[in-house]
Image 1 (cartoon, helix red, strand yellow):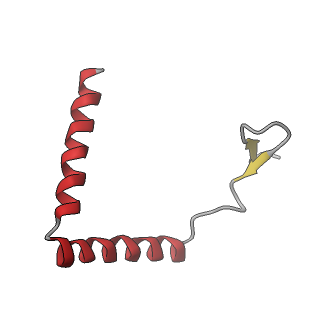
Image 2 (spheres, rainbow, N blue to C red):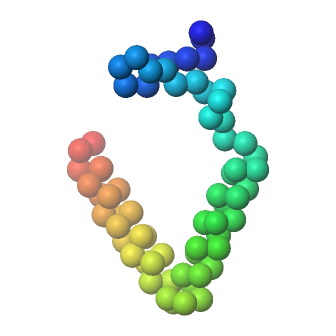
Length: 67
């Protein structure tokens, strides 16, 4: 019972043990991210990375406003 928490849905619980991030899943997700970055660098001249970087900077400035 210690590993169960309320999920926000009435009558349901969430177990941390049954939905764990394994090393295999982490490696697969990492490879997908690296492949996506490589694809962006080759096909789009890193336009996606530049876009995401600019949006991240805007987001950090927005958060700094609320500090």
